[in-house]
Image 1 (spheres, rainbow, N blue to C red):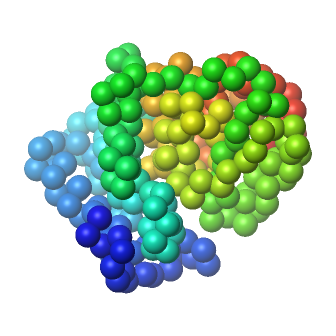
Image 2: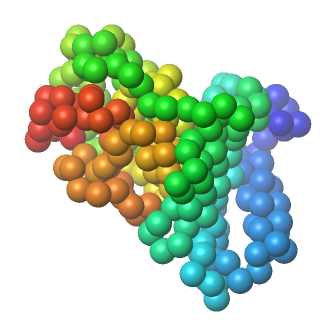
Length: 238
């Protein structure tokens, strides 16, 4: 937070994919803390090579999700951390430091925002729904998302481009968004959200209906009630 409104060093990993010196600093400190406390656990993180462990457990880190927002001074970004055993997510955390909102879930223990239980949207139709999505860094996948949004419009209340997949999934878990869609995710974007959505009583799957894993790319997260309608209306598009 000390760096948010100050100067940042920005480098580009691709045409639209950037990283700041703050991403690297946060990641370095998170890795150091986790390795000190859990030296045998593996670590998967956005900005570094995967660290193999001697344990069945792996930490999945996104030091800043919404880096472009962070770099441009847009107050919508988060830090995400998940603990997995194989492909099973046991703990999911998304923290928004600006709003001091701590989304977390433990497998079988429910989902929470700070200390209050959360649940997915109670809306029962797309027509009454607010849809969130992100375009990612793949131009083709980004165009696909825009095509889906265009196909749904005006049959939804409104749409939002979030700029942070982890917050998009967390917002779907607490009902701020009625549905969230992304077509080019990475494990650090997705792992915490899988557990948040499931523990909040929602439905999360790949866009073709297959079960989701932390390695999934194309994901829809919503309530059970809206899921089937979305799949019918977007069949062949998402």
